[in-house]
Image (tube, rainbow, N blue to C red; front, top):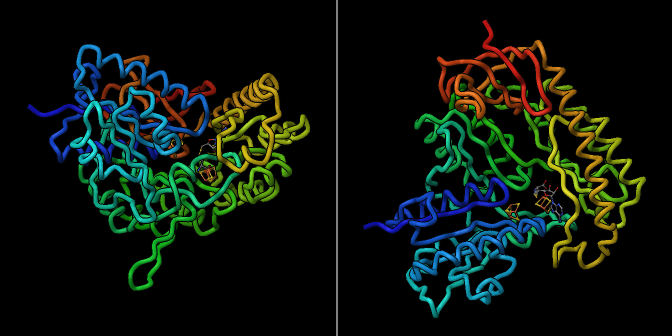
Length: 441
Ligand code: SAH
Ligand code: SF4
Ligand code: F3S
């Protein structure tokens, strides 16, 4: 009988891709994927360290996993990913974790599993300058068979002062473009209609071949877009300091490159941007947004923001609100600052904005963004969009849902089409989260 592997995935899309790599690596060893924890021989959590609450959740999950051992002492519990990399043997010291594996050590999982015993937990948290898992064909875990994620690079060479990612993921490295294009072509041949190219900062993707040839992100994107006009291409995340005119022009040129850019701003205050070491100003950010909109008036622009970073004043906060209004983001991921041990900010700047002030400012940003999302959606009423059907809508089985190129969720009555079809819809009304549509003539 084959062994069963259960993985819970937390954090960003990179972790989703990594869990698919782990399923593939252990699949070769005879492990079969299960979604039921109670039948798993191996339980893994692929973890995130970006904010303290992400880690707190995992501590809770470790207790839950441990309970499985009460009836089945042979179950192996592993913590992998960013929290494994950050906390290393601290996780083993709980006595509840058998395996700890960092993001660059997944090829060693078969060995770690072979060596693990209740008395000898196994750990590998070596970071690598080369590992990109380029040759591993991930086992897809998406639910709809329509959208696949493809990691194009790993690590990060920026040192944003608040951020733990460079410490948990190591130095930036780009994956061989040929393997990326082959993987995209392969998923398309298997019926997928959308790929999302992933990296912490895709604009700095740079492949240097053995003969000195180089491939940049805009060039890679163009090659993936050329696989087929029926394959939609998305990517994330861009860094405002690096997003280039060349990228914008490639996006504008190919109909199947979705017009959506996720461009995390973090703050609207130049003083704080400097302190965060983001290496751009609010004026630079606004100029990039203007350039994007000039080339692609319908381009979706979304962002990340941190409220209450070290020393943030009311005035800094107002600068953020003003920038939000000025850009009119379509959507935003909003957080309050969470100090991460070992980062530049933790070492140099006191975490001095009281929690209630952080929360109040965050709530003000959320309230404003809700209005902006609603306004953005209202501007689409009466317009027509090509939508890729993802499946039945959550609320009504007579309705389908799918996204516009700009990444807005549409729902529409339709009992004819199915997942993976392209349809044209007309927007009738909206909420701040959804466009309510009908099939267009
Ligand atoms: N590489 C991406 C971000 C990855 S982390 C980028 O540079 O944009 C995702 C988001 O988490 C960040 O954009 C930031 O808004 C948020 N974040 C990162 N560290 C944080 C911290 N210490 N506290 C609160 N939010 C944080
Ligand atoms: Fe973190 Fe900055 Fe790198 Fe993004 S670019 S992962 S925020 S260090
Ligand atoms: Fe979290 Fe690691 Fe991603 S810290 S955001 S899972 S790179």
